[in-house]
Length: 155
Image (cartoon, rainbow, N blue to C red; front, side):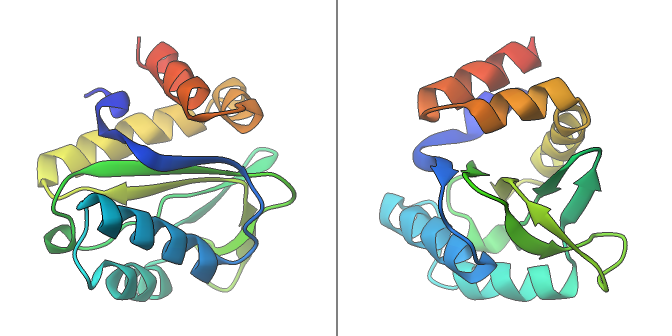
C-alpha cells in the first residue's frame, strides 16, 4: 500500500500556525467538503470519535496524532497531512486519555475501505516510528516536499 496515493491536492498543510484541535478539524473538514471527499457530518463525527477514542501518540521527542472517523463520512479516500510550525496541537493520548501530547505531525485519515485502513495504519506506524522520517516531514516546506518524502519512505 502506497501512502502517496491517498494524498490529495489541498489536503496537505505544512508549517501551519493552527493551535487548537477544533480549528484543525474545521480546516480539514472544510477542504474535504469543498473537494468532495467528505460528507456534511464529517466534522461532527471526526470530533466525536476523537473524544471517545483519542489518537495522540507520544514518541521519542515528538508528538503525532492519527485522527479518523467512520467510513460512511468519506466519499473519496484521502490522508490529510498537517505539520505545525511552533509547538504543537494538544491531543489526548491513545493509551491514556488523561494525558495529552503536543502533536506537531498530524495525519487525518479519510478512509472508507477496511483493508485500506489497516494497511495505511501499519505503514504510518512504521513511518512515524523512525525519527528521521518525522524530522524530514516536519522540515518540509511545501506539499510537494511532503509527497516526495513519503514516496521515498514507501520505497
